[in-house]
Length: 132
Image 1 (cartoon, one colour):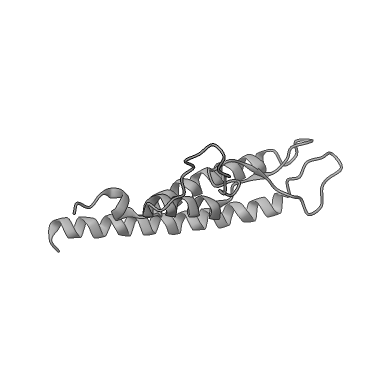
Image 2 (cartoon, helix red, strand yellow):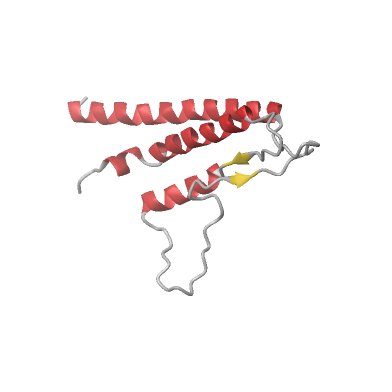
């Protein structure tokens, strides 16, 4: 049985890509914190990882008939979801700059952790190829 990169790296590659995508969305929210009418967006990271886990394991559900219901959760494909504000502003902007900064920093730390996991996977593969 041959080992592929997808099997060797597991879900860590997908996690890293999702973290990059979420960082872009959160940065866009921060950039538009003072834009009247701007609605804060986010990505459902957990749903994206669930879908990635299913694709890595090969056990994802398939729609084989047009009458089948779509049971995937919204946001699992990386689509943007609107965030419900705790306290909307008068101008209709739903971005809370402090919360966005907190989410951005947490995402940055999680990105670093995902990168470390992926790096250790590559390190292990390198050692295995060298016979160490």
